[in-house]
Length: 301
Image (spheres, rainbow, N blue to C red):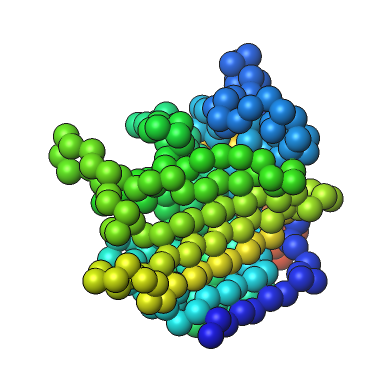
């Protein structure tokens, strides 16, 4: 019997948006790799916000960050057991059934494969959050693969169904050294469906559902099906910044703080005849405001 938890009235946190100017004209151009996977009529069926989301260029160290909450979880006992077993290859499926807890997705460019690295963080109420890493690679027979590590990748077919961007699994491969082998059907981990549905007002739903059928070897008849489905709602406002810009901003701030504190220390020394100075940076402001320097050092303020 399946177990389900659902919450539909979740209030989403606002996400800070950092809008940095492009370094050059190439960064202003859209990323058309997802666009190339769809026919013109299906792409035009997507809402404009979805089109912009999947043509955002992340080159030059930029990162897109989406913050939201887990709003739905459904799994039968077999699905829960399968999620735990898959921890042997990195745990690509959710492990916890908590809802109304934070979730964060970050998307960065995969320099090695010219794809995208997706990192998903799912909080829970019993311990550390679960973090799932995967790489979307624009390769293979379908033009798109999801790589989860350990040489295992899953082909994905992209389509648009009622304005919902849909990804469906299309075969699994494993790489052994230079060899790339297709897994036989009886070893495949089942069917995976991922959807991206825009909800308006800068929010969208990301849903993932895996259904794995286990059959008896001697008869081919289905014995049971492991099912695991989750749904997450995110704020579409994103923080997008370059790593080098963040380092430069941090360096500038540190330099400014150093110069300011150095000036305050000099003022404190002058006010005390050059023989005493504040013992801690947090007290320097109080010194400058006229407090007795000896009182500050004694810790009486």
